Length: 123
Image (cartoon, rainbow, N blue to C red; front, side):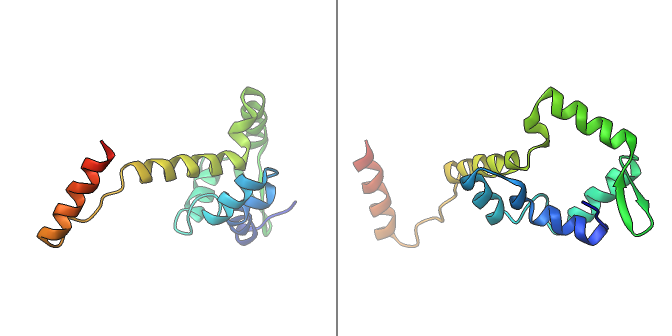
């Protein structure tokens, strides 16, 4: 596929389309793709700065170095170039967020007593 900067950003946002596993595809869809709207252009710029991508007319294409890096990563561990791994990492982050969710302090003495009772009931 040929990409210009806009279509490459769109492909990053819709990276779920490149994932076969249904659950991971849905999670990546929820995460709105690879990177964030604020970081996608910066990621592309960094790849250009490191000469992994170059502009060729209106298109952005990988350099020989970029293609070689992709192949090395793919041979070392195919997961390194699989957008489904981003979805797996999002799931792990969800677990961490759930474990460390901060609950607001009780608003009243009754709420505090209820929180203590719930904690005692779990023991």
